[in-house]
Image (tube, rainbow, N blue to C red; front, side, top):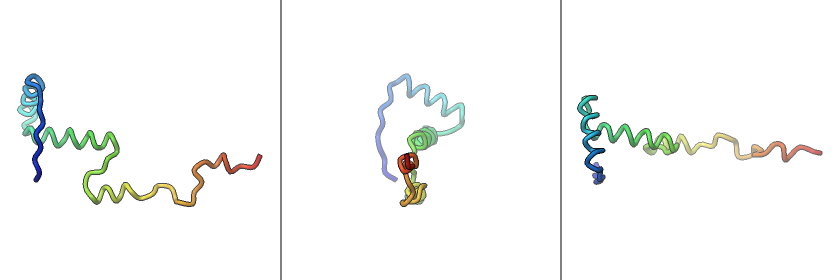
Length: 73
């Protein structure tokens, strides 16, 4: 698994360590949860299978994007 370094200020790191202890989780578990939530918030898929599902068109290619523009006046 690839590793990355992230710098936290001392106060934030202490707060995260307390949260991890309270939740009986590791810092890695908290980071995984936080990044998963961040990706979900920004509608970014995690993994190839999710990327393929998300890439499916929700609207058929021949559907009119603006039906009001096709109306006759």
